[in-house]
Amino acid sequence: MRAAVVTRFGGPDVIETREVPDPEPAAGQVLVGVAIADVIFVETAIRRGAYGEFFDVRTPYVPGTNLGGKVRAVGPGVDADWIGKTVVGRGVAFGAHAELALTATDLVEVPPELDLPTAVAVYGDGFTALMLEELAPPMAGQDVLITASAGGMGLLLIQLAHQAGARVVAAARGDEKLELSRAQGADVLLDYSRPGWEKSVLEATNGPHTFDEIKAYFNSSPGADRIHDHGPHGGVHRRGTLPVCSSFHPDGHPARNPADDQHI
Image 1: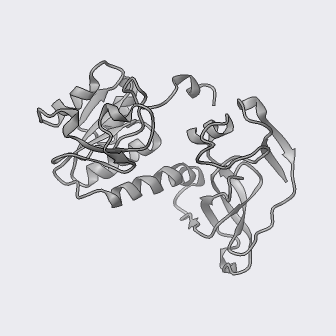
Image 2: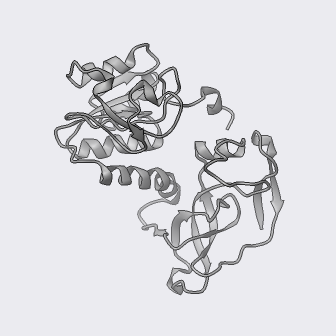
Image 3: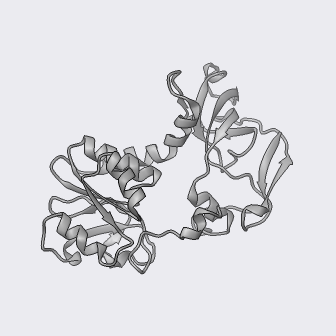
């Protein structure tokens, strides 16, 4: 089969199309003929050699996580009824950017009324957004802050929080992304390219509070202590307020290199 192979860590030029052996499903695995696969930002960072402390990736490897296609074969212990079904799933140890890919059995069958590109697009961020919704306390009547609100997960979180009865405060960079956030149900829009946007969060949530009064749990990225550093990971909770935040640079802006938007 043909596959995209990352030959060494670096930019897009390190990817080569190669002929590689067809994978064979082991026990508990499913072989999918890949019709479409997505590319998410973290995968481009891994390809460049980042996040080695979290992902044990060695070159050469076939990248790609989320995929959609038809089940071609199943391994021992897997119901053969899966064969021929159109599904979305995650590649085993990456591997989605190929004509064939192995997945586990946590597949989702795609209903006929949903086109496959849309199903794959919503699959990865959809899982995360629903997990956050499940972990969050009741949101009805609360203020909810969503940073990076125009990203894939941010747009889904806006919809979920709005549907749950929250007042949604969306933070993104620039008018175009803020209008996109508004279209998904955001009530208040904040541009975090403007200095002091953090104080605007407090003003928008009707409280003369300092950041030290916010009990915040972020991932362990630089600058998270701009809000607070009480602990790692999870949600952010303050009296009547549930901000859902991305990672932060030391300058207070959500972590992302704008140059990567054109060179992924």
